[in-house]
Length: 265
Image (cartoon, rainbow, N blue to C red):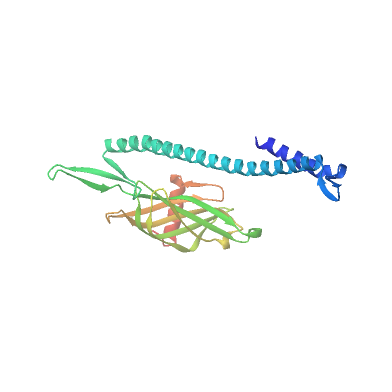
């Protein structure tokens, strides 16, 4: 429809522009100028052009309104689908947790344990122990590999961890397998570590940028659950610019012994 209107407008505009070049639009009669038949025909064409342009404006506005209504319908259907889909996921998830005496607190984003108090006939909610860990490491080399920044990311599962405080100690294993105790250690001080989120800390290892093969990270820290109960967080991992993970038993003994010889127990 719009294409047809545009085509007519173009044809009319060209016709109106060409007619005066070939025909007289007026003629003198008894000393007065009067329009010729071609002149009247041209006026009709001009009026037709104006009407088509007005119609085009109204048509475009109408299509805009129809698109808006259609978009609102699609948005409404999309919202209904999301709500229905969420219910189909959340309800079985909540029912499944309830079977094992657990409950998901969506506000806190924590899984909690339900304990039945038969004497008082009420339900007491006990928090599930948080499980913090190092969930990612990243090496960032500077220009021409003259500097090295190590980013260590912490996350938690089961529930949120509070007052995560302690120290990170580093050992650098060089290309020739020589071990170097990298100082100073980093301080870890996180007020709250939420489930499904993470917190990163970073520092420089510039002095080892040319010779580094592997970095061993030892975390010695404490944390609390939401009820204020304290736990220890001791973790030892290895990482390099490509990957990382847990140590083998033999490697763990070797590295821990090196830490002890440098005063870290």
